[in-house]
Image 1: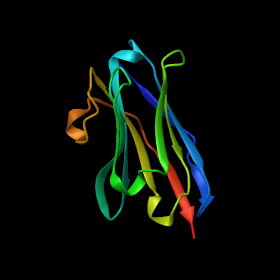
Image 2: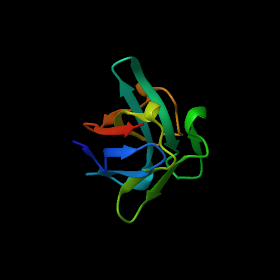
Image 3: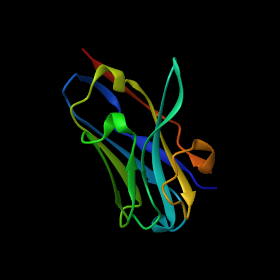
Image 4: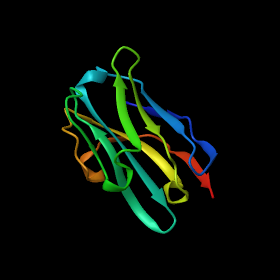
Length: 124
């Protein structure tokens, strides 16, 4: 059973930064496409960022481009989401997702494995 464990959420003021990390427990990490999604009480789960399984491709939702960066460390079996210039509208529960040989899809149904989520709260 593949498990994903997120860390790094918390409370930050608008304009601040947070770094989320996601560790995968099993398998060859480099063979997984990885992504971050987020959910609020008002919205369905929303795509945030993705990295293809070889890490050659990355993609972002327009609202975070230039502020968020997805990166992967294949030696540590982790994917991170560096979030800068945070805004109150970034407040959400953030989820890490993995798909074997994923190509950086934006639909949540394209991902087989999910973390438990980590809360990010941005105060104004």
